[in-house]
Image 1 (cartoon, rainbow, N blue to C red):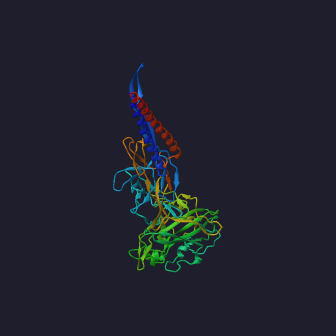
Image 2 (cartoon, rainbow, N blue to C red; image 1 turned 135 degrees about the horizontal axis):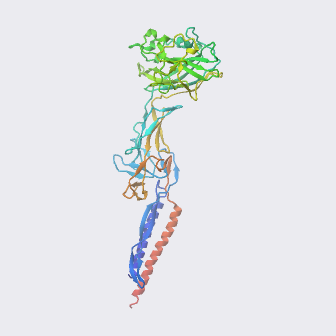
Image 3 (cartoon, rainbow, N blue to C red; image 1 turned 90 degrees about the horizontal axis):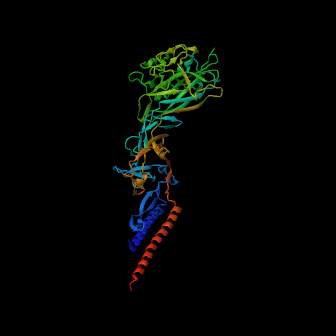
Length: 547
């Protein structure tokens, strides 16, 4: 080994430090690249050559070489944006993207996604973000005037392209009415009937008149919109009137009727005879609300028309039977609204079964819980019982077998009649207005009809050895044998990071560190160049020996 060996050692130093400067330059060039992960380069000594010494064999190094170049996956800071589809991962994991109609899969920390003209959620290259489609398992849970779908996310199998193909929310028919009121305990009775005092409003209703019930015949009324299966709105009005009682032991009873517009009543009496032509048109349910001396609701009765009644018998109370119950322990009424689709005709959209909730539910549902559960206080009674005729004694008013009062129930206090709360779960068709993504990666659509529907759940991937991933350019990584297979799952599960919407992860390049590394790299390069020049000088001296 001669002087020339030191020349080549110096050359390896120049090459290695030149490579490191390339790494540093690339880091600095990407200081503002979304989701960029800086690289760290490590040196290692090259192979050593054995030499013989007086004490035995020794080794002399032959220079330096690049040991490894690793990506630094430290968390980058978040930049706030105005776009809901700008996403950042806080913690471990990568977004999964794939070209359209291609099974190639890439991984990225850059979350600048946008919907393209075909509804795909894509990155700047047009690669589609992957996720699981939400499988809706229920019609929804009403919260005020909003409805959030009760949904289950399928997290097995291969994730699919996130694509919005339907920008419209289908209408939903009303299946439940919540009507919570305070009925003034000091209100006088208006409609009276000697034979049926608890059903005076029922007898006063005339669907062929305008109005069907006069203002002087009830104490309070409340109207709300409900929807048929086509999304058409219809008014449902509940009328209330206090019943004059004697020897009631401080109890108060209000009768009520639930009604629709007689002209929109599409029920059929028998065959093709229209319900809307009868005096009972629009009369959907009748019953009573019983309050104790303190004004708290303690009992409810509900009657609906039995099937197969002739036109002459629909206003006969003997043909109105105790209502069936839903599985929620609430009485059911049936409506069949006429929907005007254009100016020339009206058509029935089909019957709707609706729960009526005043704040009490029946928790004593035997069998299926549909056709049983009424009680007079002394014995159970069948729903087929027709208690509408000549109920003049408060003790004969039917009630639920086991009453459960909700946190918000109707009352009868002396503070004036008012509607405390009313809601229903139907809605008209709506159009997508905007989307959002929560920290669990659930993509939610907000529609013009007030619906908030979960559409997709983002899939993110992590690796046992993320440092084994291959950089593909464009902020993309690909899987390799060194990285191992992708471990996919939902954000915020299994050690994976959470999602921040309206945010982008900035480059994690630290300029201060890079500048310091540049200085040390420059000095290393200079020192290795000195090795070459010094060796050259020594070789020059050697040549000068022969003159």
